[in-house]
Amino acid sequence: MASGCHGDSRAGGSGGGEVLEEAVGDVRVLCPAGRIDHTSVEAFQNALLPRLEDCREDGVAIVLDLSAVEYMSSVGLRVLMLAAKQCKGQSGRIAVAALGEQMREIFQISRFDMVFPVYEDRAAAIAALTRQE
Amino acid sequence: MRLRFWGTRGSLPVALGGDGVRDKVRAALRRAEGRSFPSEAALDAFIEGELDFATSHGYGGNSSCVEIIGGDNTVICDMGSGLRELGQQVMQDYGPGQPRRYDVFLSHVHWDHIMGLPFFAPAYIPGNEIHIHGCHTVMEDAFRRQQSDPCFPVHWEDMGAEFAFHQMQPGQKYRIAGFDIAAIKQNHPGDSYGYRLERNGKSAVYSTDGEHKQDSESETRQFVDFLAGADLLVFDAMYSLADMVSVKQDWGHSSNIVGVDLCHRAGVAHYCLFHHEPIYDDYDLQRIHQETRRYAEIMNQGQPLQVSMAYDGLEIEL
Image (cartoon, rainbow over all chains, first blue to last red; front, side, top):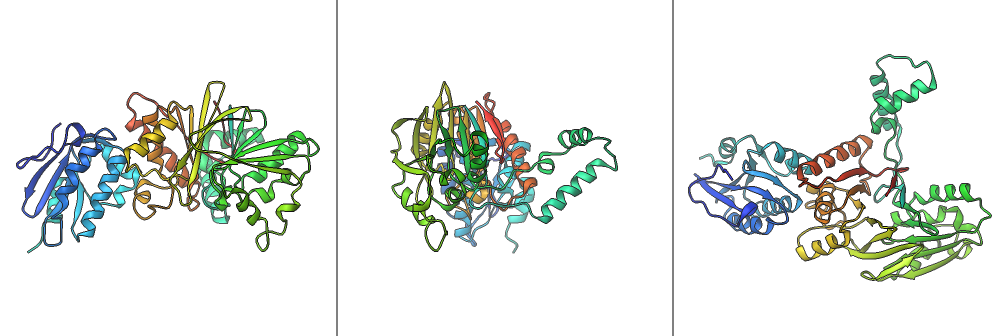
């Protein structure tokens, strides 16, 4: 599955559970891929949540680039909510970017577009979340 | 087997207010674009053919009550405010002098699921039998307390019908009123129970007031197995997923898209959204119906799923 993430890439699981990673300044871009449903959600969760531990006010900000996610069922969205809660609890910032047409619809139907700041593309999200010195 | 929905609203009955009526009149007039209708038939054709469901009909406001037709007696799931109209219909169909047996399956005893009984006319007529089945041990106590001072002026002892309470156990199979029935425990404050009813090769699952968190695969799998291959699932789809897993977490209700995912996993043919959020108006519910259909399309993996939005008066034939 194509992904916008390069560099320090680490597979968190097989199939839809895979999450690639790229650092852009003080922003960490995380790129899940494929179909995230009940068959892949455990790998997705295990790959995603540990990478949020340093999402803090003085740490990194997180951009979830969802361009390579074909679809995400309610179990995958639940993991995104866990991610949002974890980052908020640590006073960190998290946003999503580059939703494909289906993912955009899923975000709207589930009302997750009201949970996360949603950016058109990763560049816009990185610009918005980069700490201003 | 046929299901007739008498009450589909969650938590609290609602009524269409003046502002809601005005919105519908406005929408209908706008759609008519100044046309005149020379006959009642032409007007009906306009209403049925050109107005959307939210404008021409709406979803109703009674709380949970579903009749399951096709068994030996009058079979009912939950006794919400919709029960009042069910009672009126039965009296009209059979006459007040004809003793009948009613078998009720109770998801739980929260008020919106029992509040219809004091207004259920057959309950006041000697000769009628009302058998209430469920897994809670407090069923009779809840009904007695509902009909005692200072909550209601007609006391339990003054009801004319004969009542019997039947304790069920989740996981066991029963044969009641011509249906094969099993119950499953659900996550809800004070617990609730879903019921699977089967007859003549058809199956329907009535599952309301259950919060399917999907944070435990073994628990989710247990429910998926309970649903497996059902012809119809009536499901608590009260909230958006975002609300369900955040501000309304642990309130004991599920979301529209969780129901879709469970149906796809279990091979359910027809998904009926139920227990609607009382703050939603008819246009909100219509939009949620359309969105849920679209989500089912997106998630469809070669497994088409019929998606219905329950409304007071809906009938589904299996």
